[in-house]
Image (cartoon, rainbow, N blue to C red; front, side, top):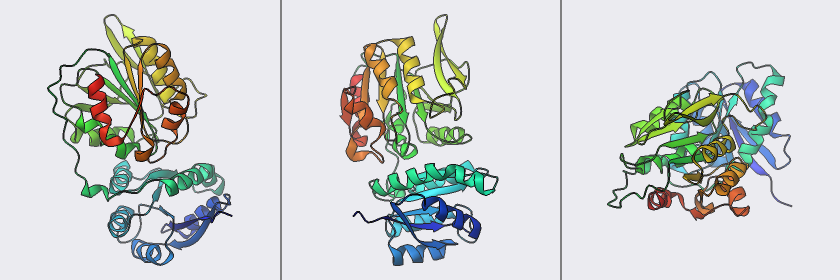
Length: 344
């Protein structure tokens, strides 16, 4: 019999600690081995209990959750899933991910029990995924890589680069986008699964460390070389021809997708508009969003790269594409930008 995943729950609210324990208890693979109410107690219990995964609130008395993540990752890396209030600063959540947390789940602002339990399935899935994620050095020890210098003449083979990513994406994209040179000749569009309210702040952070301009996508925006568009949380990103231009459209429809924005929706739109001139990349993430869209791109003659299993935080989305025979090449994260430049 496989031993259960040992989880430590960190939150300053006794009520939320109790609710998170009960949510995790629905999964027989998980055992909550302890709870902590602040950073110092959490650091002590991680050392004593040796949990497989920690769930962590961000706003706590004294040192906050970001400080706990930084200090714990410097001591001994452990998979951490942030469990944050929806009203908390997106900047604080992004700082937690930068500090080394694997993923995050939003607590509803309404603390009625039935509302909190709405996220139970998501929390369990992310805790299980975090337990299997590869742990590396603390991110602060790894500087953002500079753009790759290339003397290669771009071949004008593609008209757009589209990227789909989920769990591990905020960290993974920082290993790819900043390495693209300022004169990268095609527009870039990214679907990153994040809750509403986070993509604008994330795009701003990515812009600060990138040679290309990175912004959150706006409706009716023209696709231009040198610009990276991050799809807006809560709306699908598609492309449409407007005379000699291609512009973006943000829409709530389709309504029946597991994610909004959806990688499948963006990939299909790119294939419809650009045909064989699409280079698609599927990076780390749970589930199979991107599988159907990759099929559309391949059917129109485009190219698909997938992140290699050994560098994925969660080898779900790339696995689905690769096992369907739709990946032209599986590439480790540290070589992904170079592989993109070689093909473009």
